[in-house]
Every structure is written in C-alpha cells, then in structure tokens.
Length: 438
Image 1 (tube, helix red, strand yellow):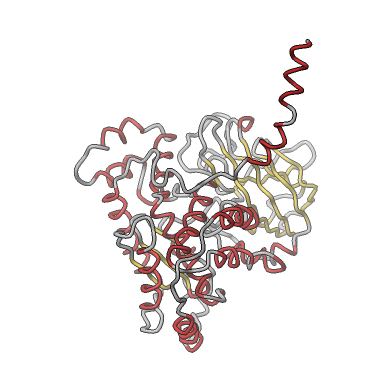
Image 2 (cartoon, helix red, strand yellow; image 1 turned 135 degrees about the horizontal axis):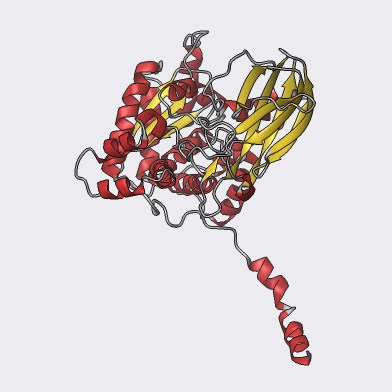
C-alpha cells in the first residue's frame, strides 16, 4: 500500500500536463488507404458512367462567364493538392439548391445556388476543395467496399480484384444492381472530417484563406440552419456543421500561412453577376439531389426514396424535438395523431450498426445487410429510422421515415420511432428528430 501511494503521488503531477498536451486527431494521415476493391481506373469508369447519366437529367450551365471560371478555380486547387496530376471534370448545375457532389474518379458538380450563397472566392474554393478531397481520399469506393464485405460477397469481390477488365461492373452486378450499389456510397464521419482537413490544407497551398471553408459552414448556423442543413444534404450529412467548424479551427491554428497567390475577386464577382443576369431556374427544376436519387446515388430523401405529400413547413417550426439512440427498439414520441392527420419528420445524425466495424449510416440506413428474423421491415435499409402508430394495446405496422418524410397517419394513436435492425442493442450513435404536425 505504501508503494502504491508513493507511485500515485509521483504520477499525479504529470496527469494535467498529459491532458493539456493531447493533440486533436490528425485527419490528414493515411489518405486513400484502407480496404478498397476498386482500382483508380475502376473509379474513373464508375464516375464517367454516372456523370453521363446525370448530365442527361440536369440543366447544366455552360456559359463562358461561369463554366470556365469554375474549371480554372478547380485546376488551381488540383495543382496545389496531394494529387496534382489528377484529371477532374467540373459541372455547374442550374438549380437554386445549395449543394455540391463528387463522383468517384473526379467528376465534380457545383450548384448555382451554392455559388450564389458564397460571399467570397475563398468560400467557394473551400467547398470545391472539400469535394476534391473526397475523390483524393477515394472515400466513395472505400465505402462501397465495406458494403461488399457486409453483404457477404467478399469472396466474389476478392476473386474479381485481380481481373483486368470490367471488374467494377462485375462486382456491382454481383451486389444486385448498379443503382442499388451506389445507394451505399455514403461517406462516414471520419471521411467528412478528412475531406475538411485536406480541403483546408489544399486551400492554404493554393493561396486561398482556409478560413473560407469555416465561414461557409458558419453560414449554415443561426436562424437559417434548418433550411441550409436540408438543402445541403450531400455536403453536410456527416457530421453536423458545428462539429466540423470546431475541428477545422483546431487544424487552422496549426497550418502555415497561405501561399502568396492573389484571389481573383473580379472574376468571382463577374461569375456571380453573370448568374444573376441569367433567367432563374424553371419552377419545376431538376435539382442535383433529385437527379442523384433517380439513378440511385443520393443520400438525402426518405428511406423509401420519396415523399408522398407536400411539406408542412420547415424544421424550425417543429413542435417536438427528441433524440433517438441507435439502440432504440421503439420510442414513444409523446405525439398523438388522428387518422389521416398529416405529419412531417426530419432526422439528422448517424449510427454505427455493427460493433466490429466503423460502418455508419444516416436515417436512410444501409442497403444490403440481410433480412433478419426480428427486422421490422426486411425490404427497407438496415439502420433506417422507422415510425409506427400504436392505439391502446394494438401496435400498428411500421413504415419508413428516413431523413425526411411527410405522411398521413394510417390510424389514430401514439407515434413511436424505431430503428430497422434485427439487433439494435449493439448499435452506437443516434438521431436527432424533429416532428411537425398539421
């Protein structure tokens, strides 16, 4: 006991110093590494195929005052990135939706609404650098590879890993279809943090102020947070903007000053002026999120891929806000509904649905993880947010909610929320849920 006490006294003074010296996680390490059944050639073939499909659905802006500017900005970022020899293609979409998206292989889409929202070229460059970082980190195909493992076809995928042609097509066909396979391409929390960290590094090397990325995320806070978080479904799914800002600030403090390189403020202003002078997008515009959902790539939307009714309002108007842990079986929301009464549900956050992996999903769930005897809806993604209306001792049939749904109550009773999994008890994380009733 005396020896133990002496050791404790010796160790105590060092504990505070150790805690103070603890550094934040460095997300700029091990870029592009990890499990991946796809080569860079495969990534390009995947991106090219889906870029061709997207371009047939979207209204692209090829104006000489906009498209060349975005391409030049992208080229400057690539030249200062960790892959300066990378070939990327940039597209500007004529939609008010604030969004950006990167396909594997370097096919980058930037919405008109995002350019409109950016106050400075640094902010626009920050978002574009973030999307490029997803490509450089090979995040899309790494997530797909994890899904292949989870779906139990790793043997087939491993055998195909040495194939010299059509490998990616064969793997996806084995997985049950191209559209379904791409529904699994959801970035993890670590992927998003790494993309932010690489973007900040890239901005500094290219002569931009890395603070621009922080400024853009901060524009998602405040009174407009709910609207912007929803419209930026693909850009800010994992994790919340506030958490990303906190991590970025820690990294910015350790970055060297930006390389001397003048920001082209005049050309940025000209680009915005050109967009303002254009006719607005049509009333029934095709947004990037809708086009992605149509070909099975999107992360946003409900677990069924559609909303059945028009929205009631905005997330800020929700009458009930609650947390649903990932281990939830069924949780009483305290909301009583009449039969036929409309209600709207939003869900944010993520859960990890397997304790031995870092596979994460939002409220839309993860495709292809098996039916499971106790899974409430076998045909709906594992990990998806579900609803159920119970009346007295009678339990209603479960229905999918996902990240956003507007529904009419199929019966009168109490609204309950659950997770679509046959073993909820090993799930980690949770969803924040907003409920608005008619």
